[in-house]
Amino acid sequence: CSIPLMGTTSFNGTINSDFVLYTSLSAPLTENCISGIQNTTPVIETPGFDLNVDIHGGGFMTMIMELIMNMMDDMVAGIIADEAAAQIDGMLSEALGGTDLFVMTETVDLMGASAEVTGCLTGLENNGLNSRAVLGFAVQSVGNRDAPGAPVIASPLPASEPGTLLLDTGFIGQLMYAAWQEGLLTLPDAGVVPLSMVSLLAPELEQQFPGATEMTIAVDGLLPALVTAAPAGAETGGDMVVDLGNFMITLGVQGQDVYRIAAHMSLVLELVSDAAGILPQVVDVQSTICMVEENFVDIDDTALEDVIRAQIQTMANDLLGGAAIALPDMGMGFTFLVSDVTPVPETNYVSVAFEMGPAG
Image 1 (cartoon, rainbow, N blue to C red):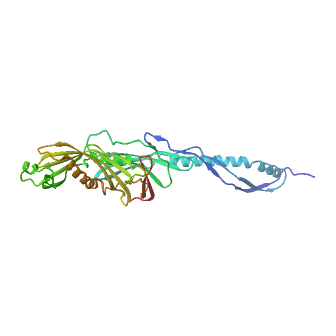
Image 2: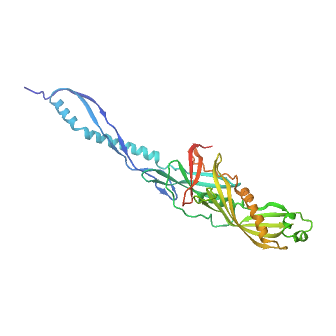
Image 3: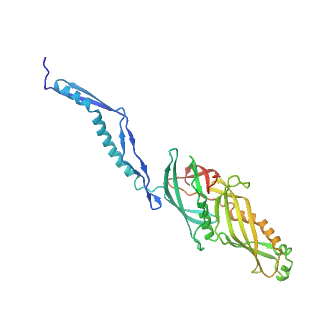
């Protein structure tokens, strides 16, 4: 028999395969914030790659083509995978690189004070089970009260749970520090009480100030607040504790300072969800009261301290009650919708259960 050495051969075919892409994403730290996401060069696998070629014709060339096609599966798969990886690498780099993540600047109100809050993504973590984004914030007030900065207590970062925001109470401390810098804890006209009431403890007052009918109250928080998470299982309950030290209360008559009392107050706050963010409610007040100055007329110190202590609850509600803490708008068209707040044991964090909703 004879085999024609020359002939006309035509062929067509299809390629069937799954394409599986592998790449690792990382977010490099730039100064304090993460800017853009970097990806490693993609690797593409082609499981089940099948180069199906139909060859039509005859002769020796057809036999050669059949042999070549049977040997080309791996080579063609490699060429296609390499080309696709190069194309996808460029697309990923263009889409992810140079994008600032969660960068925001927003004005937040607390207790009537305005503070500029800047924030950004500062870290990405993965423990094999959950992924966590770490957001960092800085608060800048327009107040001019001189102090080195907000007092904070370092705390380990708790384990992450899906659907929760771990809020460092130091952030609330920064907001309260901004309010303190603006003088929101300095109230020269905090109220008045009938002089006749105080005269029950010091009858000489009416003789010292004839014609006077009232005693003025001025308060001044000499130190910024220290904010911590409430101890787990505390009898008072609550989610957060605000300590106000060196809180000076001055009682005066006709423009004269008569008594000065120093107070240390620990305000236990329950944080409840609110349309405006998180609403603190004062659920307990612990206070230490001490007379530091008496002018003109002596008074029963213990009795006056008891009277002041009884007024601290009202004063605390006036200071913090109803002052909603607005969580920053994270940009990208969404914000946090809070459903529940609980303190995390042995840390200075509170766990905020939330859903994402449209901003504004």
